[in-house]
Each structure stands twice: as structure tokens, then as C-alpha cells.
Length: 316
Image 1 (cartoon, rainbow, N blue to C red):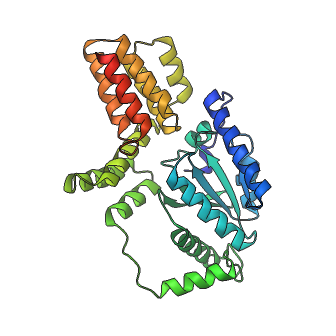
Image 2 (cartoon, rainbow, N blue to C red):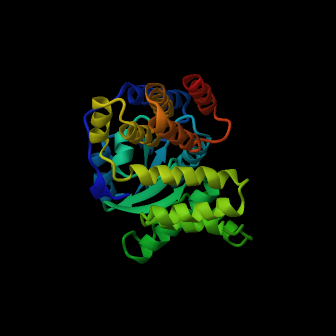
Image 3 (spheres, rainbow, N blue to C red):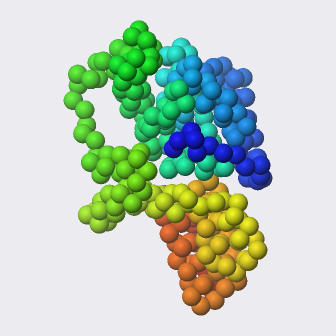
């Protein structure tokens, strides 16, 4: 993810509007209850330049890429809110909802949600992706701030953490820590340098070694999805799909883009429609690709269950 990759597109679909309204309602509820984080702001295509890139010239900005109705995203968001409040405004928290701002997420080449990064001086320092608790995020922040102080980017007296958080982190450093999963470490390192093939290979190796590892299978499917959409031109892909509804390849590309943007039902319905309209190899290809998209979501997800029933109806 690079700031130079940022671009905007004017089209905003109804799904994104609905997600943005839900996000705004959540923020207003937090303000009314007095639980809002005063150092956080929701960012989108319109305010990203000012609220993230320009603000990062004066203060560190933690960028949190989130997904609505995701337990992992809720955990990460809550932990970052607490850390930001404890830090007392030493850094800002910018939140991107991939469903409310799918074009921004695509422009930033987001590999997964939730994902965290630090933006300072217009430059991005990649952070954790996937599930992360407050302790893990605090440790990552501490490491980033330590490095920036050593480089002279931040003042020597800049901690980036509240006193209580800093003390807690120092205490935990002296305790035994669980070793990081080597597969996850290898894959995340590959993703940070943009090597999707290496990340895919790491997760594929883990699935081969432990076929029952649901987490590895989920992340393998997610990395494969990101790899497919990484260089797609969303506008051109949607136009091609609209021009020829029976072009299965075009429908597959848009379904991938929708999955990437969190519009899972739209992706499923598009390919189920292709199954209904086509026959032979085209129909089989649409069906098989739909099955790979099911793997992007956790086992038992109700949206997948519903789509499976619709697929069965389309086939028979």
C-alpha cells in the first residue's frame, strides 16, 4: 500500500452509501453515550488526502482498514480506540470502512481487512493484518515509535503511548511471549513487500501440511483473491461485464472486485446469474469460481449458506 497509489472514482453505489450511513450512525451513538474516541476520524475518498496524507506531515496517523460486521475488525478498532485515548492525541486514528469506501480500499491496494498501518510524513509503515489484540497492537506501535525516534523523525521524549500503556508494555516485555507462527510471519512479510505469490505459497504449504487448518485455508483464499484483483481496472471490468452479461470471464472479474470490496452477496449473485444464463464449460467455470469465493468467508457464514442454496436452485 503506497500513498502514491491513491486515486478516486466518482461512482458510489447504494451498498457503499448504506455502509457509510451505518458507520455514521455508529459514530453518533458513541458520541451520545460518551464513548467516542476524540482522536479518531472516518476517512473516505473525499477526505483521505487531507486527513491522512497531509496530517501525517505533522503527526503520526494510524490507518485502520476495517470491515463492518466483522468480529476481527471490531476487536482491532476497539483496541486502537483505547490506545489512542490513552496516548492523549499523540497520534491520530484514521478509519477506513472497506464497505463504505470500496474504491479507496482498492486504490490503496488493501490486502485484507482488518489491516493496520502507520502513515508519517506521507510514507506508510505496514502493520498487522487480521486479528490483533490490544497487547499486540501496543507492541507494534512501540516498535514503530522506537524506530522513528532512533531515525530522528520523532523527538526523544515522544512515547506515542500513555503512561499506563507504556508501563504495561514494559512489564510484558519481561514475560515469556508466545512465538509467532512462522507461516503467518512469512506470509505477512511477503504481503508487506507486495509478493502475493510468496504469501500464497506460504499458506498453501500450511494447508497441505494441515488440511484441517481452517484459518490457513481462509487466508489462502483471501490472498488469492487479492492477487487476482491487484491490477484490475475496476471501471473497465464493470463496463465489460455490463456490455456482455454472458462473458463469464468478465463476470468473474467483477465478482472478485465485489468480494474484495466486501460486497459478498453481490459477488455471489453475479456468478449465480452467470450459472443460470450459460451452459457447458462457461457454466462450469462460473460455478467453480463461485465455490472459490465461498472459501474467502469463514465456514458456516450465513451468506455462503444462502448462496449455496441459490446455486443449487440455479443448477437444478
